[in-house]
Image 1 (tube, one colour):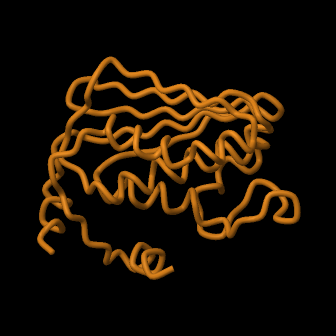
Image 2 (cartoon, rainbow, N blue to C red):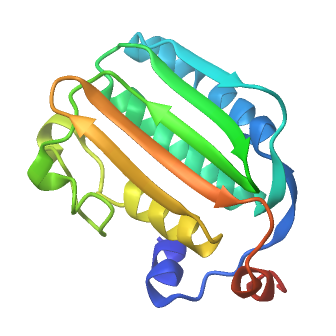
Length: 174
């Protein structure tokens, strides 16, 4: 909750270092093996090789973990696909599920604090995961977007610059 307060106040410090994004994805997927088995979802990772950049490793881990956690929660036991690529100085992470999807009227709000696309009684949670994803992604100079169709699933795309923006680099001094 302290991080959420810092995010909301714009006072989150980044600790930028050279990071292999693919290694972070692999570590997160490894941590979620039991959850994936419990939900019946297979998690497939596709990448052409390492994707290195200057990011805050622990914050990048949070972004991947929140997206994968949501995909497993709402994926209805269907496969989850994670792809990672590098293109023109940016890294692109895509996390896609084939579950319940998000109603069109909720898409504009799901990245806000305490917002949820589904009732808490069925899925639990506080409505902070996607807010954290958006805030951390933007703090590292990137963007996140979602494409979703109810009943067919959701596709979250995070795009991050591989080199820090001047603002992010200035915040990296802890």
